[in-house]
Structure formats: C-alpha cells, structure tokens
Length: 220
Length: 295
Image (tube, rainbow over all chains, first blue to last red; front, top):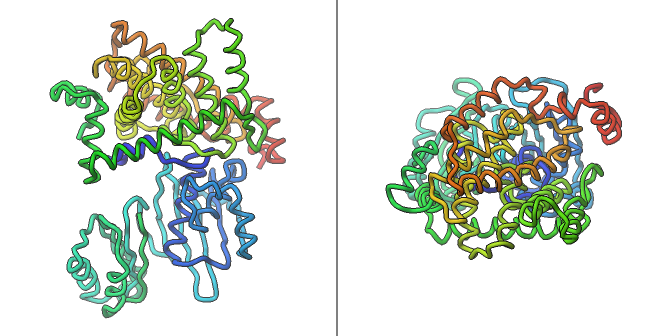
C-alpha cells in the first residue's frame, strides 16, 4: 500500500496551488537542504517535464527555493522565497530542460558553497508525496516521510555491519535499508530509514567508524 | 487494516463503531501514536480549512494569473438576496468550496483533501453543514477522518492524482469522500456512507483533467463547486434510503480503469479539453508569453 496514513489523504497543510507542483517541490528542496546540512551559497535547479512547462504558474520555483531555505510546505515565507534568497545573497539559477524523464515532475537540485557541492534528483508523485531518486550520482529511493540516515562509505567488508551495530546499540530500529555503489570496491552509499529521529551522538559515533566518509540525516 | 470499502464497512459494523473510529484506530496503530496525538493533528487540519474558507468568503482573493478569484464573495452576497433556487445550505457549500480553491490558487494556506486541486469539496460541505446543524468540534474532526478513510481506499486501489487518473480521481474522489462523511455526521450508517460515496463518484466518472495553462484554476475552482453540490445530493439520497446498484468498490475500480484508458492529453497536461479551446490557448499565451503547445 503506497498511502499508509490518513494524513496522506487529509493533508498536507500547504501553500497552494498544487500539491505535486508546490508542496512536493518544497519537500524536495528541503530534503536537499537537510542533506547539504547548511545554507548554500548557490542553488542551481534543473526542471523537467511538467515542472519545466508550468513551474512559474504553480510557484514550483519559489517552493523549491523555499524548501532549500528550510521552509515547510505550509510556511508562508515560501511565496517570497526568491526575494529572501536574494537578500541572503544566495545565487539562484533555473534551467528548463527538454530531456524526457521517467516521471513528469522531476527536479535536479545542485547546492554549493566553498566547502562542497551536493546534487540531488527528486520526483513529486502526487498529493505532496515525494521520492528522492538520485544523490551525488547514486541511485536511491527515499520517501522523505521517515527520518533517515545517509552514509557515504568505502565499499569494504564490515562497513555496513559497523553502522547497523551502532544503530542497534542506540536502540534505533531500521525500517528500510538500501546500499548502492558506483563501482565495486569504490565509494558507496547506505540509505537507512528509521523509526525515530536520530540524535547527533549517533551520527558522531557512525562518523568515527572505519571506512565511513560522510554522514547526513533527514528528520521527519 | 482495511483494503477496500467492503472491509471498512464490515469493520465498523462488527465493532459497532462509526467509520471515523475505524480510521482513528488504524492511524494510532500505524504510527504508534496516542489517540490525542492523532486527533490533535486532524484538529489542526480543521483549523487550517476554516481559516481558508473564512478568507475566501470575506476577502477579495485573486490569483497571480488573474484567472480566478472573488467568486466566493459574489455567491455569499447573492445568497443574502434570499432568491436563490438551490437553497442556502447548497449555495453555502458551493461558495465555501470555491473559497478554498480561490485561496489555493492565490498561493494561500490550505489543507490538501485529497489534493490541493480538489481541496474545496470536503471543507466546503463541512462548513456549510456547520451553519445548518451546529455540530460539535469532535463531529467535525470525525468528518475529516471519515473522508480520509474513503480517500485512503481510493488512493491505494485507484488514484487521487489528476495526472494519473483525470479529474475524476481528484474532485471525483473528494466528492465521494465528502458524501460519505456527510452521511456519518447526519446520523447515517456506515453502509449508507458507502452508498453515498458510490452515488457521488458514479456521477463524476469520466471527468477529464484539463487545466487551462496547466494551472490549478480553470476549470478546477468551479469543479470543486460542483463536487460540493454533488456530494450533498448524494448524501441526501443515501440518507433517504436510496442505494447504489453498483457496489462502492466496483465504482472505484471503474474509475481507475477509466483513468487508465483516458488519453494523456486529458490528464493534467494542458493539451486537451478546455485547455485546448481557442480561449484556453489565448489565456495561456497571455500568462506565459507563449502557448505551451508552441513551446
């Protein structure tokens, strides 16, 4: 069953006009922000399909940037997100892509500052629900509905066991887990959806494990 | 966990509880939350809906495109003349549905029920009935749980997305959800709720999604108005003892199959239907500088 909560049906509370083009877009932006972990200096957003065709009328542009500014779907500041970004001297650029994608509502977000770059592809699947399908070139499926922890690591034996043992030690239950790698033995990504928000001490503990490169979390 | 309307009604009957209670218990179970937490979240949604309705019927809300706004106020003024043919509750529901969608189109705050484009029907009918029968807050919150229970079945067995299933999946689903909830609030049985849902959705089958310029405005706002009136009539019919000859779950299945056979031009692409009329194209060109089909 794709929809499991009554609040997927009666909800979300959101700024109009479109649950998939506005609320979903804000959620995609916000996941990118949480994974980046800080406010970026520059935002580049590529829009595909229906997003590319109607983003101005639906406020998809302001919603995506609002999400990157860490605004929730119902935050009234979304309407002024572009102005707020400008005041914060954040560079914002939109690219309307012609390429066909698997889903009609697809956005690619690149966030950057002097410390690093993050690139994420999100799709908006209806009623405000979203999925993140790509992160820094890794394929993944992330609903954004549950808290999650993302761990970039070296593809070596024991790396996955180390992370799951650490979570078990802190009594955090794993609801869904996925591992993807670009190439055998190289960089890989663990995506772990869990039942409760993850405290910083757990992230710190995971980061100290052997073969771990980077850790990020998404709160509910 | 119920998977279809038959199971939902059966659960309510066997435990001798209303459909809203089945939904509340399932939600508590799914989230591992207390009754208070689940209730409170829905109460918040109710507050958002009431604020949107109030704003829409009192302020002259306008969308950025200029395509919609101000009609809810016109209807409220017209109702005061006392000469309306449809009756006060009917027009109140219609105007409050329009109010919600006008606020939505103007990038105001709304609660998606089940989507933003169909957000007017459930609150529109609810706040009109509030004027008529003065329900308790709990009855109003339960109205949303009952709506949600039926929407839950549709979302999991068919679709609530216009892009996937046409407007029958959005405003059609919202109409059935409202009809079922009206029946419970007015003292009908779970089975009567399911008949009201079936009657309402049957009369929304085949509804295409053809938003002018791809915006959630024309015809979406007025379709919510018609959905609200349809929901009231379907609920009244069911409360009168009229039943749907086709069972609720089969109507939902028919809706899903119709959606699948609908060409994509009629599913939220702004390529067919009203969006493709000469005036629709003209408005599109005015808003975006160029018609989407020329892009």
